[in-house]
Amino acid sequence: MTENAFTCQMCGNCCTGEGGIVLSRSDRVRLCALLDLSLSAFEERYTHGAGSTFHLTTKEDGSCIFFTPGSGCEVHTVKPDICRAWPFFLGNLRDELSWKMAMDYCPGINPNLSHEEFLHQGMEYLRARGLIRDCGQDGARSLQIEDLTASLKGGDRT
Ligand code: SF4
Ligand code: SF4
Image (cartoon, rainbow, N blue to C red; front, side, top):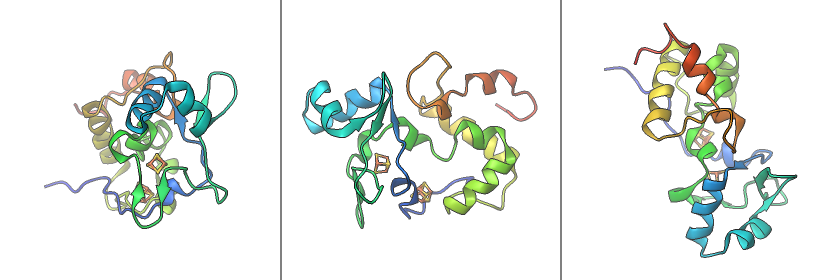
């Protein structure tokens, strides 16, 4: 049986970095429903950004506003798509060097498998969760994988 290309080790690295969690409108709607806030109240309290781009606010130490050391993500059940999709981001799927560099940051990425296997499992993972976006949609560019799916031939075995 093939090993998993990714198994989260709950280290919290991806919640304590430099922020940058981009929220789509559907992310914001899910989060404000969980927090029992209006959309505008949620955006004012928990996001920042310019124009139509919304980023989750971070704490003074740079960690995500919803991250609590020891217990993790406070909004796990409705967390943003970008959080659900990591490490299967466009860059890591398309580029083997990016995938290798991501291993330094995320101990959940299995270094024993090939990049081709990472790509294969990643596409299945994203498809199963409805996380593949096209370039016209809002939210994180890392999930705009439509172009990649169109160009995949040998790498995508599904
Ligand atoms: S960095 Fe990787 S292993 Fe650590 S919590 Fe995030 S996804 Fe899980
Ligand atoms: S929303 Fe949750 S999973 Fe995403 S960065 Fe914040 S604490 Fe981490």
